[in-house]
Image (cartoon, rainbow, N blue to C red; front, side):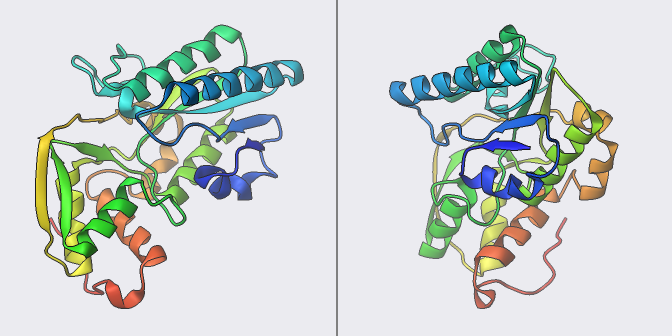
Length: 256
C-alpha cells in the first residue's frame, strides 16, 4: 500500500504499508472546515495529481470522503441515494468524488464517519469535548448527531475492503450507531466524573450514514461490535489510550 500523507489517518494506516501493493491511499486531505478557497484548490490539485499517478501506474486510488454530505433535506444516508450536501465541506468532497469517477481511474471511495483515536488533533470532536468537559463548560449544538468508528476498527475495515477486491465502488465506513453529541458528552461526564455546565447552541445537522452496503461487502465487521452502544466502547478505548488512568472512572460503563 502506497500512502500519501503523514497525518492522523496515514500514521494509523502505516502498519498496512506492506499489504495491498497496487493500492494508493490518499490520506492527505483537508482536515478542517469551513475550508478557505486556497485549501479547496490545494486538495483539488492533490487529487488530480494522484489520479494521474494512479492512471500511469495502473494503481487503485483509495480516497477518503465524508458522510457529512448526508446532512441535507431528503438525504437517505445510502451510497446510492441522492446526495444533498448540507455543508461546504460536504459539497467539496462530493465534487472530488465526481472528479475521480469521471477520470476512469480504478478507485475505492470511502465516506468516513468520525474516526477518533490516539494522536488525533486537538480540534477534533472527542479531543475538544474532553478539554471542555474537564474545564467544566461544554458547548453542544442542539440536534447534532455523529457516527464514530474507532481508528483501530477503521484500519481493520479498510484492510478488509481491500482484501475483498472491491473496486470502483463508494462505501460508507461507519458503525451504524449514529448518536446525539449530547449522549457523547453525557458519557464523557460519567467516565471523567465531571458535571460540566452546558451551553446549548442553535440547531445542527445530522450526519447519519447507512451501513448496509459495508455489512454486505465485509460481513466480518459484525465482530467489531458495530451497532447500538458502540459509541460508548469507542469512547472508552479512546480515553484509555489518551487520558491518565487516575482521571477515568474504572467502574463498568455499559449502560442502557
